Image 1 (spheres, rainbow, N blue to C red):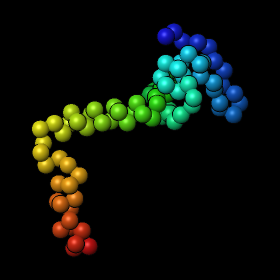
Image 2: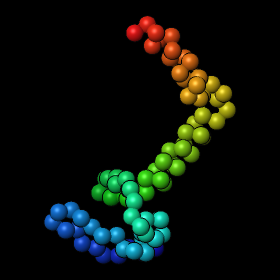
Image 3: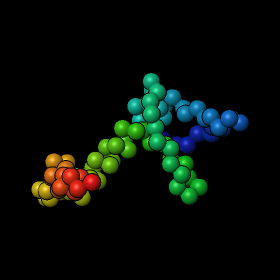
Length: 83
């Protein structure tokens, strides 16, 4: 989808074009994450950010049987008992 011109109000608000919102599932509104990357502002859906983080986590933990919440808690339990 090509870029469109938009205006940022004095209060910092900007309206996203309806076609853009529909394309990413925000046609009825929703939460987004706004990132600054150098001089580029990136807007991503919260669901998209979470899905990306889950994909990265699965990739990092692939094949590691002891990489679970239960394993983590079991490892930390003795330490917590000493506090």
